[in-house]
Image 1 (tube, rainbow, N blue to C red):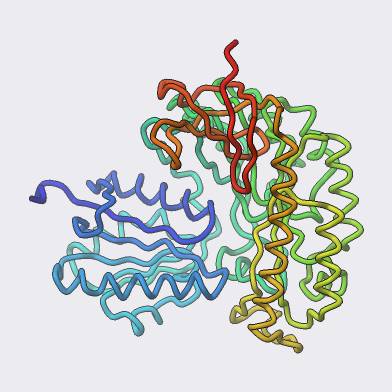
Image 2: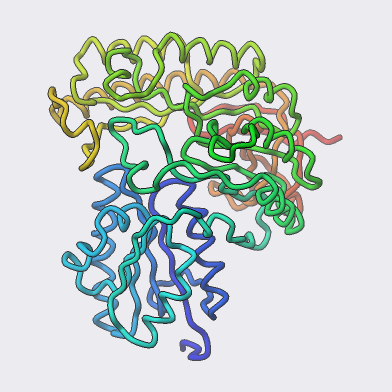
Length: 444
């Protein structure tokens, strides 16, 4: 039976790692007014959907989930339902017209106002919409204590984007770039280290341009060097990087900074210069490849992953073939690939030459099959090698196995004792699969 002294919060997160961290911050803020999180939405007094609007499919998932929540609210009229994130920022109070049972719509700049808004809803059940942009993003500094036994954590270092890629809604929904002060970031990372965190991932829509609005010539590479001195932190990662802003100083960090892991996610989006220009990406294929070559010269062990969009307006077969040719030359470790999804308000919406959905799907399937070959090829090359793992805990594949990640972001399953969670261990890789590796621990 539900304990009436407690208030329960259920958060469902859609989309990227930044949204995951935003949800952690929401939970931390609402804990201060008496809400404890639950994995059971039927127990919840408050349900928040932290949404994504980057692709149409993500939007569809949100409204499908809302349809299910309507039934819960019919059973429990006191239930508060809130919608946050990019979809909330995009649609605002239009969400109420589509789903009348929603009580709260809050945008990407309003997370810090959640306790105040929820308290108002508890006193007076009047719908609230809060989607204003703020000059200062207070929510970026909210400390979210990591869950018990966590070994890794996210740290948001900036929010927003100034690039206006033709297909992307982020600048409209997250606002212009805002970087946090380096001393605030370091303070948060020290707190995480005190909680036992060994690995941190720095988050931003374009981390490479961190510091541009601070006016103190403090670069992203400078931030990484500062973080490298924090005691207790063993590994540093970051996402996402824009190729046009990838500096030589940052590339050199992959050999100069011991704690920086040998992995970079560097979205290319297309292998056609004509399409890249239509996308407003700000670089050519040749410039992108030169940076990849530079990365591999400086750090031969680096793992390079990427994003690719197929079926962008105007993409003809020869443009698509140029993307395939680029993939063959670069051979990414893995790729997140998507069919182009039209978003309202973006420059790409006005472009001619829309690609048929069936052709988009054909290209996507072909590209993914090709990338599977390259991914398995990269993984197989690691058979027989010695790899350092940060052990995250039990494997999802077997209760008798543990799982950890290499510095190059590859999953390794191996036999080991549960007490190794949170430890750095060395394993020998003896078998490669498409999505993971199999290893055995090396006894020192």
